[in-house]
Image (cartoon, rainbow, N blue to C red):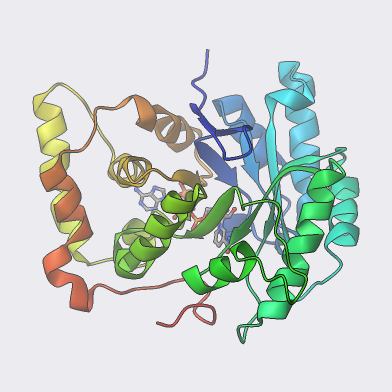
Length: 302
Ligand SMILES: NC(=O)c1ccc[n+]([C@@H]2O[C@H](COP(=O)([O-])OP(=O)(O)OC[C@H]3O[C@@H](n4cnc5c(N)ncnc54)[C@H](OP(=O)(O)O)[C@@H]3O)[C@@H](O)[C@H]2O)c1
């Protein structure tokens, strides 16, 4: 029996698997069907797509194949897509995604990125339209991605004069979240947790592949050694994902390898990192030289 990710309750009462399989980055614009089927066969039930990845048909095909192979029902899976940046027809775009994915609803629909330059009215209009697709049942939950605190405040704060009365608090904010952006991500994560918005990390393994030679690589062996002394083998990626989960966030990751997919799903069962280990991963003392953002540089201030 393959492991599955534990379920986390979102602010609207729905349950979201704590670790998701993504079809962007390495699979961007690719036929990801076989990778998606492999991920579901490994135990993933949370599948993260986006209109801009230009592969929703393949995500849908991979889901369909795995459902047949494993006799899964639609309710066994948690399917996410994201509104393409600069698109204002929120419902039309989602209906098109549902057609490509061959499903009647998604579990979670995210605004992929806030408009830039910052535009309060555009944010409010987008959020109101997101609330409509939720009320119509086309998306069970709605949320955002790459939102700063200022973007979040714009859609959380009612403005009677402008006729803006938000009814739904976003369930999720999916952001780049790894030790090398922690300085900037931490205040966003803290704000989200205070407001009942679940932070979600993408790019969590950046310190292992895209930005190498940093302090994270130096501290991981000592942490792995400490686990080994307790009779537990832990992989570098598992340490980083454990760090993300201990921050109260959901992980969205990916791998072409079945072994790694299974390792990711084993992370929740591994014993926690200690406070000292967490501190060494964050490398606070090196914070001035830490910042290495990989994605969405146009959205954030640095
Ligand atoms: N909302 C957004 O704007 C946004 C932006 C980016 C991504 N995302 C979502 O997040 C998902 C994951 O993004 P990501 O690819 O950046 O995730 P990630 O978890 O940071 O990286 C996953 C990659 O790490 C590699 N990897 C795993 N273990 C490794 C190790 N020990 N050493 C070196 N490389 C290792 C895997 O390659 P192998 O195949 O070799 O295992 C895989 O390609 C995307 O698919 C997408 O769904 C969202």
